[in-house]
Image 1 (tube, rainbow, N blue to C red):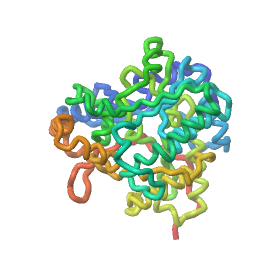
Image 2 (cartoon, rainbow, N blue to C red):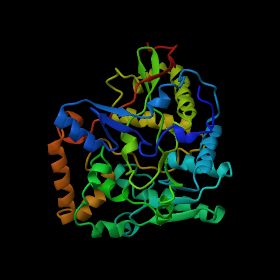
Image 3 (cartoon, rainbow, N blue to C red):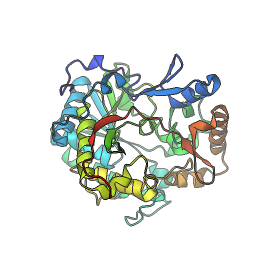
Image 4 (cartoon, one colour):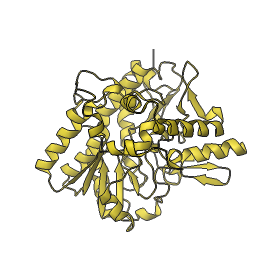
Amino acid sequence: MIPLLTTDLSSIHSQEDSVGYYQVGDKKFIYKIPALIEATKTKADVKWNFHRSVFDKVQWNQSFSTDLRTLYGQRAQQLREKYEHLTLHYSGGSDSYTVLRSFIDNKIKLDEIYVRWPIKATENMYKANSLDKRPSNILSEWDLVIKPDLDYLKIHHPEIKITVYDWSDDLHSIETFPEGLIETVGADWLNFGSFIKHRLTSDSEKQWFDKKTTASIFALDKCQIMKKGSNAYLYFSDSPLNITSRKDKNVEAFYWSPDLPEIALEQAHALLNYFNTRPELHKLIDADSPERALPENVKCLDSIIRSLIYPDWNPNKFQANKPQDSIFMENDAWMFETFNDTRTMDSWQWNIDNLMSQIDKKYFRFNQKNLITGMIRFISPLYKIGNFTQVDH
């Protein structure tokens, strides 16, 4: 087992491939779309490498039952010792909220919280509604979650700089998408909103980039386990890791890190222990279950995972449901209403169509209407964490 708080972190991984890379033949790609274009041209296989030099050596079946709060605190301290300036990209959801608590509860300095939100562009487009959990009601998260959290921090933790980037003006200033933007941002979802909001960084981060002593912390991601036969496996997926551009920044995934693999290990064993005593729920994680991918089961599994690995998260806190497999995501529906039949939307659509024409269809996901819903995901090797002693009946 790799020891806690490894001292020489610099030898473990480089920042260039901090959230994995793709291998096509003898070429290495940081971003997914260029890799798929190359694979289409050369007919070579695509391989996704997510810190295998570390994760392949971890004894995943050996749990020490370490308290998750303790591990989260150790991860926060690890990042504090590694960088001079830490910026947490905050959404108010369970992932980033737990990261924030890991710093605050352990009295570890966090320099900045960075929130992206189109405040001016949406202020007259909705009324906050805590009862509407549809993805299209994501705008209510500002009033019901994010702003209250930030107001609390201003009073109780004024030492943390709060940066809210209102990207409303960017929506109107971008007439054409810059070359390379779509290839490097939001690759899995091909989503209009992703290209706007995830290309941005805070001014504070930029001031530190030249020194290479800042980290952009992203709360990536929830534990993933799978049942195959009677065996339980942990695995990592590229999709959640591709939500942000890595250009000009040091991206640190808080939970899925080779610097502290104990987090993923103990999360996975918490899930194994839970499902081991509930065989009626195995359909949620069974690789061979046709019910596994049903939206209601995906939502149920997500709720279970949150409750097990985020002990301080309040499940009654408002969060809009995540959109299911759609390029035109419901949570960005307001953007399509705003930009319908505009030069910006035309530019985005042209780029998407151009990219799709260069990529083999086998790399896309399709819905029942045979419409493209995004890119296929790549996963790591399956790391065995144990066995299910109680089986389905």
